[in-house]
Every structure is written in C-alpha cells, then in structure tokens.
Length: 259
Image (cartoon, rainbow, N blue to C red; front, side, top):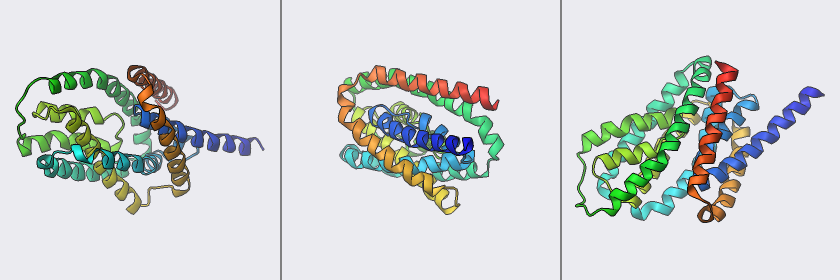
C-alpha cells in the first residue's frame, strides 16, 4: 500500500513538473531542471530519462523556430545546420554509450554548469544587445572556424543540452553576427536541429520510455501555452534568478544523493 502510494505521488510529481517545465521554457527557459529529475523520480534509468525528457520537450522548440524563421540569415544556414546535425547526433550517441552510473555521477555537474551558464546568459544578452545597437557593417563569418566553434556546443546539446543557448549566441557574436533577432533565431534553430537529431537517435535506439514521454509532452505543451500568455508581463531578471536558483538547488540535491 505504501509503495503504491509512493508511486502515485511520483507520477503526480512528473505531471506537475512537466507542466511547470513548459511554463518555465515559455517564460525564460530551464524547464529541464525540473522535468529531467522528475523522470528519474518515477524510476526511469538516467540515460533513458534524459532521452525521454529531450523528446518530450522538443515540439516546443519546433514552434519557436516557426515563429522566428523570418529572422534567419540564409547565408549562415549551411554552417549552423551542419554543425547542429553532426554535434547533435554525436552527442546523443556518446550519451547512449555512457554507463548509467557514470552519467548519474555526471548529472549534478551538468546541472550546476547549466545553471551557471543560464545565470551568465543575462549579462551576455545585455552585451549582445549593446553590440547590436552599435553601428556596424554586416559581414559573413568564415565558415570553417564558425563550424568548429559551434560543433562542441551542439555536441553538448545532443548529450544533455540545458543552458547551451547563450553559448550559441556568444559564438555567433564573436564571429561577427551582431543583430539580436538574428542571433536569437539562429540559436533556436541550432538547438532545435541538434535536439531533433538527438531525438531521432534516441527513438531509433529504443531509449525513449513512451508512456511517460507522451504524458510529459502533453503537460509541457499545456504549460508552454499558459506561460506564453504571461511571458511579456514577467520581469526577465526575476525569472532568470528563479531558474538559476532552481537549477542550483536541484544540482545540490544530486550532489548529496549521488556523489
């Protein structure tokens, strides 16, 4: 009886966490800080939990790409897309080859790194906006150096992914892409394609626990819809602080539980 009650509570928490994750992703990002641990809480093995979480949250990224497609720079698409495909596939394959225990020990470090990167995204975004406001002559970055800069970031997205968006924007800015809307659209495209490649790799490899994935996908989508209604009314700095604190607390729990 106690075991059955515990299972119901874990199941309810996964549904709730998925809903909140969808709201967080619509408002500021960082939803995986809740939805991934919730997958673990219902008893999914660590690697399968990460794969299932990636698949569940991916449709929201696709809708973002559709909304931002007019801001994409066509001349940079071959470089960004190729780095995203290769990095996403290789990252997903490396994840699937990682031992469950090894990945579980990496999780708190990955969460902590993602939280720190998410925290840094605020100052970096302000720096990018200042650069975007300054007069400049648009120029096309050299393809190979930009590809090599984006590849490890896209690998990370395929492997774990949380907090990588601002790294993509920073890499593009350092190579001369300075218009903010362009940076944001290319960031969303790279994350979407990298995660799509990871999603397909996880599906083909049988790493997705579909029962939980579909439930999480539905409730994350509902949360995303709710979050989108309030996105423009919320203070961005406050939202970022909440996400960073949440990520650090979850990382601290995993350090205590698994290290």
